[in-house]
Length: 537
Ligand code: NAP
Image (tube, rainbow, N blue to C red; front, side):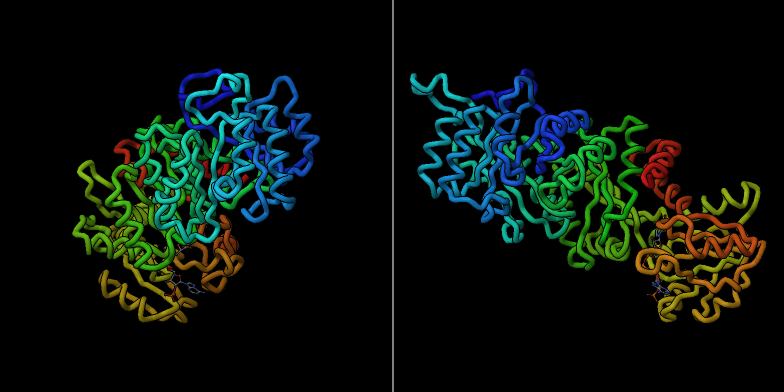
């Protein structure tokens, strides 16, 4: 078989990381140096975006340069080249003679143009016996690509990959628009299923929902993955930067045996869980990686995702953090499929952690409660008891369920306040605690207040769920909102002389509890905290 890495001197096969170059400035040599320093193995010269064939030619003639992918994507295929097919083919042939290493062309163009097949045949090694006169011809590898920008083919990525694999000697590259993380998993499962063919494949789910497919390409034997120099150089939606790929996702340490963890929610782009958990795995030398898994915000979408994970154990998904809005969906899924739910999560009626046992069975837990209690204890002092304390929980959603159940388990007297009173009533009935109308929160007399509403984050950043006048010295106020870190509620609490605890503290504690459930050893809290702090810079 032809050497898969024609410009490589190494013989070990590992998934490559390619940085697309889409700008002419700064000079290409400078961009290449930065890409290599940031962890790229090769660069993709997007000649259609750079739009200066002279500069590309000069660069390709330079004596020492890394292997390159030459791509001249037409506008019709999602690129920027708007010349004729004949111009494009001539340019590919000319630049191909300079042995960039790989030449990427779309399957549709390949199929429709005999001229292109003939010209690229002169500059590409397609494997098979070589005619004598062609032995000294350039030996680029051909990447045949297909991009599904509509998502129409995302249900069955294997079909597209197989169409590409029909062309012998070429590397197959299939990119799909992912609607949610289930599509990203389908891409990875399709790669995995074809691993034994010995053929080289690049399979990518595009968009934010597809990030897992980019990060996990190495685990599932993809030929390469793409990562950008910076956001402005990303050549496709969802492409991470090289630094993020290396620093957050530990690209170089992902192997076939690495276990996979992730956060399931909608949206999850704001989540700091990937930074925190990957740093934890790194510090504990655990062979695992943690990825964002955005799943559309319905029970049906959650069920589709979880069922897919359930019947694809080869994906190695061993644990999941569950966030808004999927905590009740996860509980329902576990109940419907007959899986185990911890007594505490059952009592709380919310699951924020899924763990998969070696026999493939799932278990649901809730670490929000222990996270909140640990954060309160750290502030109140180890000697202080929550037993008998009067606690007000604002909100009646997934977080409020775990927090209220944990406070009750500690012996606190809990009152639920929620904007929608029926939800407050339902939660207080479930847990056997008190509830008050939302308006009554102005007259809160509790010594502990935990905000479990989403007021203070996102569109409601800057707002507080409590009037400042309701806060007094002697109170302890925990805001579960952790982005922003210092919320209006905490500022008001500080000004009133109350103890103010950032949601960060609860977040780190619930993440540490998840780590311990999944990995079975003490969480490296210091490393996880440090990664959390760094994620703000
Ligand atoms: P959820 O299930 O969607 O519940 C949202 C809650 O916020 C509901 O009680 C809702 O009241 C209330 N709410 C939303 N907008 C409101 C408004 N404008 N005024 C008053 N109440 C409003 O979400 P969740 O999973 O419980 O999460 C809630 C918060 O906890 C989020 O900010 C999340 O980031 C945070 N959290 C933090 C951690 C941590 O570790 N720090 C862990 C989990 C969650 P209605 O019933 O009236 O809609």
